[in-house]
Length: 287
Image 1 (cartoon, helix red, strand yellow):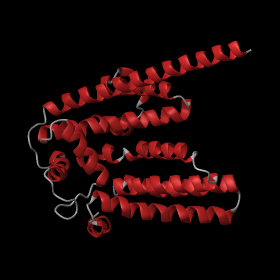
Image 2 (cartoon, one colour):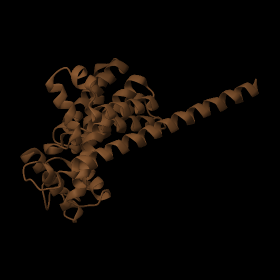
Image 3 (cartoon, helix red, strand yellow):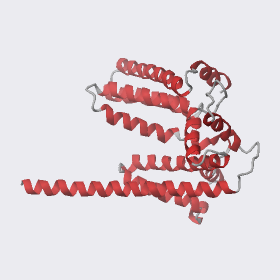
Image 4 (cartoon, rainbow, N blue to C red):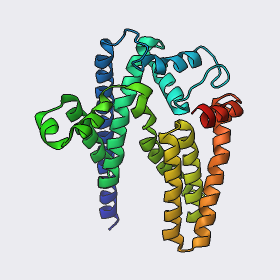
């Protein structure tokens, strides 16, 4: 009996390792495709055009990389997610204007890839399958085969919307929208780690939603704040279904909002180097 159990455990470990390697391979291929695409699309747009959105992305990035303080020395109305993610990838790719073109193009199609991965994981419940689904969908988008353009798109509006992932576009829409899969990842990470805490499932939902919502709120003024609202609505219905007590549900939702507001202040203070007031004036004034 013990020998059979040992064999079963060994087989499960081998299967688990194979799944992990398969998942990692799909992610490497996915990121490589995104990077090669970004290099190709950026080659012919190295010129500076004031109204094509490229300097709109590079301007706050170059200021941050030069040591200027966000919201004290310059405005960044596209959000802290756009600023810091764009700056990090631009720095990794070379830290200049050309590098920012590649970086923001890379982030646009990577956002599409993460969205497909998040949807695939929710459907299949297996990350390795979702990873290869994302590889297939990104490859299909890049190659634009006839079955995609003539049958699956359906309307020109859908075709245009999906094709937006192939370039940065004005205001880096896909990068700002990246908060959708990012927030899912943060929520799952927090829920997994909160299992170690000896607290009720009610409180785990409240804390995870509040902390995730804080990241969403500061990411961008549109997608981010919308995600924050949606998370709190989801928190309300999740607690209502689980607890079946309206009073406890309302209390949990209010507590989640309070946690997120406190976390927003802490995160903004951190990422703006102590300029919460200036950030607040920009987001609720200009933004």
